[in-house]
Length: 537
Image 1 (cartoon, rainbow, N blue to C red):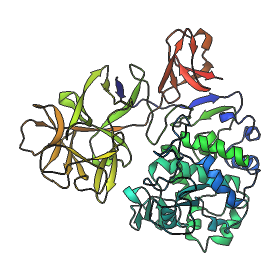
Image 2: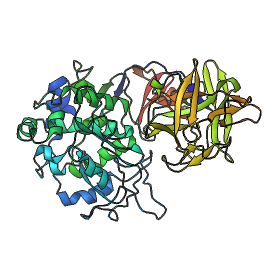
Image 3: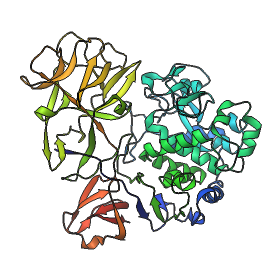
Image 4: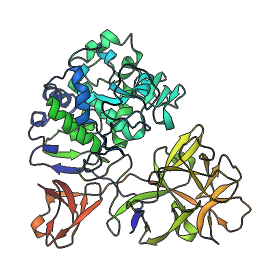
């Protein structure tokens, strides 16, 4: 198999047309048609405020429908004992089983219990006050220990000087985002968009209550005053709004969010429009607030993408079509400023046209690289994905996590072989990363500081070597890049006239299939064929 690695292409706005609203929402959002800015926010409030109110005790059972772990095809995932697992967004070590690990009022370490987390703290709206106290759109099952650390602090970005959950997944400490210096809680990158869209929902659904919340509680709870400005519009303080808009843009709507939105809608009969319409927040607060909203002919803002069932959005970026129509986008990193925790990287030896592959017998194998018409191709693993390592941090050092092997890249002995570790804090599992010259990456182990990752040209493999080894060749680091495809939106391509074997892409540019005798075999959704938009009903 081959996987295409391309330089990023230009991103453009794309119009998406539904017979009715997205995700089978019908005419639910019709009364917001033609609105923009503050008026659009108010129109959405009138639509989404009406719902079936839950009782607090109902939430535990509701979580089994809304927050079970699923894959991108919305299939339930189970542990080895056949138990359905809780999808926890505060900890990445928890393996909660519904009811078994339910909070029973007993404290425990991270990974022991889950409880009901009001992501918009209920102290901000006065405690156990209806209907906010049971609104599933902002209540999630989360690790009780981590939730306790979060308390009612606002969301923000921090170095985690006060607290870090396992693997630095969630952090608490002084805010590092411009405009605020108080204590904040930072979730992992892969869920920042989820929480941003949750907050957009809250200030929209409850816009008539915002001034009361602020006037009654802001003086007692600094997090509330740091988040809201007391007005109906814009509702957020400037720094918080800027940060949430960035979070929503960088972490696109996922299959988890779409599934959960539909599940909550079945239970309490209202929806989160910021999940149904990716980038909708830009129509209210951002770059498109002078544009009129259309519920069934939606123009997505630039750099936003639409989730289609069957796509794998995950925390990483998407795949644009390359020469073979099947690809991931990477770009060579040449500065520590380009190192991003949570992003995916591949280790490459350009001079030998190779990339690091899976673990062998205490070594890292290699796969070949070729360059054709400006595109770099490499073999992929058994899961059809590149041999990618996720950049993390442990203390002041970096970690490199192999998601496929579920191990950290490590160097545990004074020898040339590369090893693995199951923990980010394990001896030898931490690295420093600097750059030499215009392109070479210097990835040095913190346990054995005289060993650096290089490529062996005599005995082809990636391993650790001292600088005196003559056969060791410098390596380069490539970072996965977010991209999208250009879409011609003037007309819908006539499906029945499609040529046989025409390649079909989703709106993110991922190859999803080909036509067979002129008929595309697709789920319902919006696709790209021959540079034109196709609506499959």
